[in-house]
Amino acid sequence: MRVLDLTDMDEALRQAAVEVRAGRAIVYPTDTVYALGVSAVSTEGIAAAYAAKGRSDTKPLSLCVADIEQARSYVEIDTRAEALEQAFLPGGLTLVCLSKGVLPVALQAGFPGVGIRVPGHPFGPALCRLLGHPITTTSANVSGLPSAIDRASAEAAFADAPEQPSLLIEGGRSPYAQASTVIDLTGPETKLIREGAIPFADIQRVLAG
Picture 1: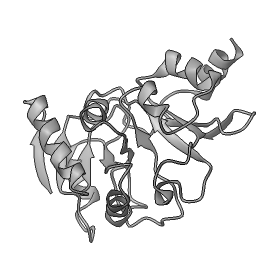
Picture 2 (picture 1 turned 45 degrees about the horizontal axis):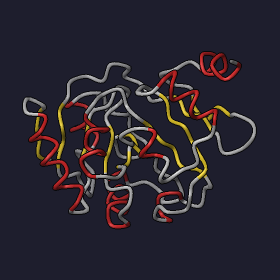
Picture 3 (picture 1 turned 90 degrees about the vertical axis):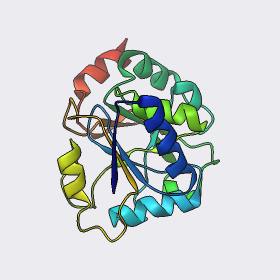
Picture 4 (picture 1 turned 135 degrees about the horizontal axis):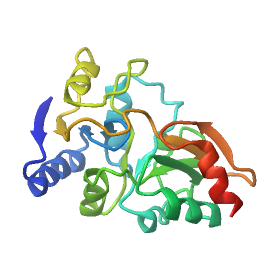
């Protein structure tokens, strides 16, 4: 796995885009944990993500988007999502919204919703903006191993992987060093799937108005 730092952000973005467009997986920094990124609109790319993680294809993959406007092309953004976006994004929150059915079937793994994130670290959103479409933002590790929070743990996470990502973007230690909070907005009731970087109580306060 080749390593590239962010001394030259534009060059890092260019090289990452080359890998993603070729259907390969990259590892990139976010504000929560390092993420495994492939093209979210490519069946080949999604297969590369599952292969790198050694993960069952019955588990869906979440998306990193440039901003909420890019997300609207792929999922339904309701008033709850808009309120939470205003309060917490970019940041450590994943919103699971109803899919519009335009993404590859493999990405959703049979679920009606798709998780979307605008990470607080600028690299992922900037790459999505450059590509013109989302990338995945599943945690950068082989399934069952701890999430990566810096270069050393990212390299260790894939040391024995049968399919290694092609490029690691080194961006220092992830500030939160824990996974994002995941909220399900696919039904009338807002549900907590996973509490992480943002307390659920803070989310409830925003939605209560």
